[in-house]
Length: 162
Image (tube, rainbow, N blue to C red; front, side, top):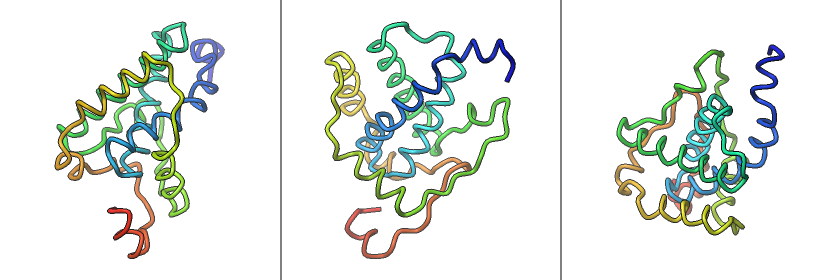
């Protein structure tokens, strides 16, 4: 990475670390599928990284910006029937990720955690949930070619609905 690219993405790694679990948790509550939630969060983060120079300065506005990007990606994914991977494939060779059973279980637990979000950010998250695509569109959604998962044991598929 060149010095110019380093400066253009200053603060990105810290932001990505802080936002990943939040994005996955919110998307999981909407999509009800840990693989889809992880895939959408990964694409959202790739989109935010590309647009990092456009980020708002204030943390609360930056969170709103992140959730609005994930909302737009979710809508595009449902329309196409598959999670997009355009940003992850841009200018780099993306890694394929197979989520282990343990990772899927960890992601599933994120949906149960209490999120302490500022009021305006919570309003955006609540609006995402209220305006989410219909359940049949979400159930039909396929992950991108960049993410798949180890099959869950039969007893977990039945109890988790996966």
